[in-house]
Amino acid sequence: MKELCDHMKGHVSQILVEWEQLVREEPWFSLPPEHRIDSLPDVIISLVGASVCEPLDREAHRRNIEAACQHGSNRRKQGIPEHLIFTEYHLLRHAIWRFLTANFRPSERITQAMLRIDSAIALATNASMWGYYRDEIQALGKWEEGMKRIAHSSPFLIDDAGAVPELRGDAEESRLRPDRNLP
Image 1: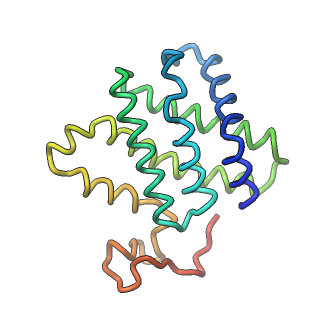
Image 2: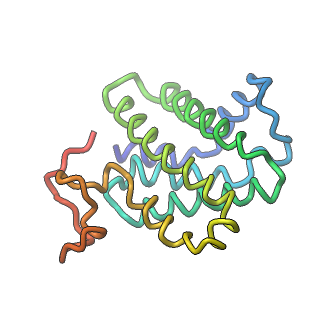
Image 3: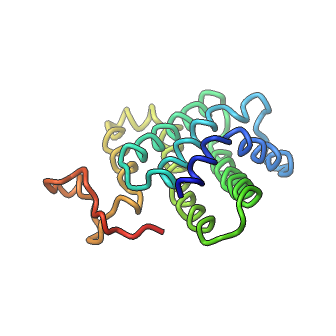
């Protein structure tokens, strides 16, 4: 996966070209051109980091959640309707798939990378919605709790017993089982 990780992180601009092409192909996607890219480069880098590069690293997942929250917050400040966030992630997934299949031969490795990316996109979409409604969530006093829950809900961080060690209170809270099989 390291080769895929390095290649995607090194070619974010090409992924964004794919994304822009998809945006033009979808007439129902109506983001103003001046707001299209926004914080997507940071979202892509953190998404790839948490899914393909370092799927067992809590910090990588935290960065993914933070970038996604910021993206959602930016979209609200820009007056972008919340439903377009879902469309953005849908198109981003397709852009990453196009990029991977254009640059690598079809293989189990590419399929596994996309499964990991799908998982990270699900968390990022949730985090973007939290970022979109950050003021309201903070007013309820639920921001920190929610961010911790989202950041630790990646299936890559859940042990075989179905719990995240840090949230369960284990002494070795920052370690995951080394024999854990990842897709």
